[in-house]
Image (cartoon, rainbow, N blue to C red):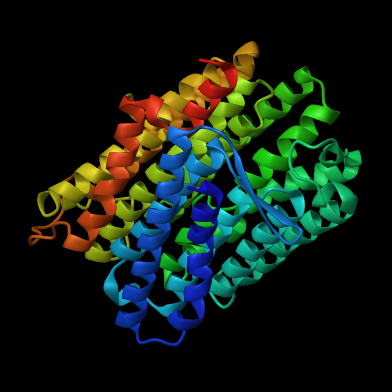
Length: 455
């Protein structure tokens, strides 16, 4: 079984469905999108099972582009595919339209493609395609022009950096030709572009502005770490390792953690739930970036695992908040809405996913954060203090959002429990989150690391 071909099929399916989704009626487009997402989940899941059984990298070439399957691709890949399916199933039916479905399928495809990219040229191509998808979704929404300028600038930086050494861009990862160093100014621009793509303060205005549009559902694919992290893990991390000594890398990590702490603080003073949610997810993405850029292999491994866990937990928490918004309308955090009496299972899912974002014991996030706090960042008292404070702040921010939406006096509410579609979307996310945390040895990323180190 060629795991690379299976994974490549998972990335190609959503692209092939896009022309039909844009032309079909709403219900038909929804079912076609859901079927395509199920197929992607099945293919990338089969690839992950194949890797767990035989933990060795597999590569396939399509012309000059190389595609590979390794522990990272088979751990984060299923998370991306399952999140894409969950977004389609759990979104309120009246809010589903061709633009949202195109955004989810396009981001699923670009996210999987960036993971599978076997060289820099393919990675940048998929990341740029993700930027184009986001712009198509947000172009005439509030924050659309700001998104165009921010994301367009990111794409220009990536293309320029990739074109700096075409031979290195075409070389497979790990080969001597692929280890070409970027000039320091271009490396700095690359780091800033990753911060902008992930929506990390102070470059997050485009994402938070989009949540205030008439259809905030469209911004969901932009708030989750579906793009940008692969570029940091495959390209920025080795570049920083070549250019910066370990102590400067730790200072950089501490600086990004400080930005995450500021982001959490801003989330705590927001009066509108979706803006608070956008800042919470921005802080999570900053934490993921710090972990992925950790100079020690153990911390970098934890970062890759945290990426997958944050995707699943972030999607579940976002869908729980969006589900409350669909039932109650605008969510003002200056008052309590008491939705728990009408939707207790939705409240439970919001609590579970929110605490998982902060490192709930028994979840994959907890395992990932343990790896991070025992790696490079542990060498810096300031860094480990900032990381712990960010995790605690995330827990407080998610609980604030949870209690204001689901508890308090509120008004007498009718039965507003989870729909069947929401159950089908949220239960697999919770299962992945808890199963991976209780049995981390099953995760392909850790199995691959054990195979490499003989553990």
